[in-house]
Length: 149
Image (cartoon, rainbow, N blue to C red; front, side):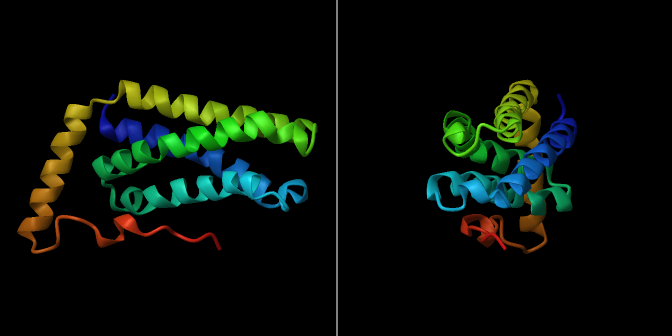
């Protein structure tokens, strides 16, 4: 799978995660539990972390950032799936849990199919281009966590 196709597919998968995040953000049942509130916060952080690269059309940076967020996404999905019944047995929560597990699974499939050699080549080309333009080769915003609003 090409980096461009991987980004396109990943962005669609992240749209599903965003909808789960929105549902959980407004779910009264979890508002008093920090562990459960970490689930929508992790989704927000992960999706917003790749947004600038998506907007720039930087497929290598998008995929690198998202792959780095995958362990956090996996932990959040597993935590929610394991504990949602403590807050509500409602079908909405069950479907949200299934959706998050599906998001992680789809991202893993995409990452398994992507041509990482092509991604590395794109990253090198992007780094050379940035350096040639006099811009720093690294983004100072890489280490900043984006707060939820």
